[in-house]
Length: 80
Image 1: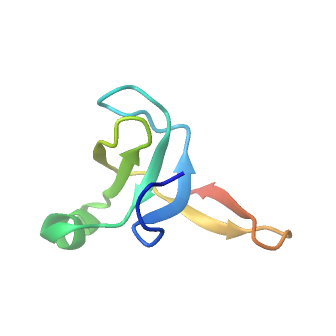
Image 2 (image 1 turned 120 degrees about the vertical axis):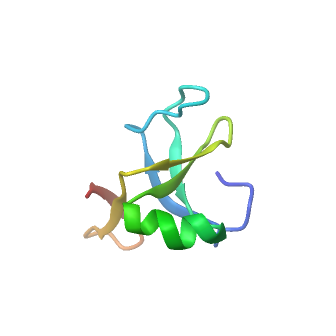
């Protein structure tokens, strides 16, 4: 999985968002960094997603919310 610290990555991944750089469908939400990502993009409804193949970060309007399942420790994705 991620090669960086766990606090930098969210456990939410999406197979329906396509990377604009390489075309892979292995995108995952990453923490916001910098002024634009922390202050401006939230107002516009944009969220940072990183490609698991090429590591390109792109801003997408789609966000997933974590949803607890009946099994302890399991996380399900729910589109918002």
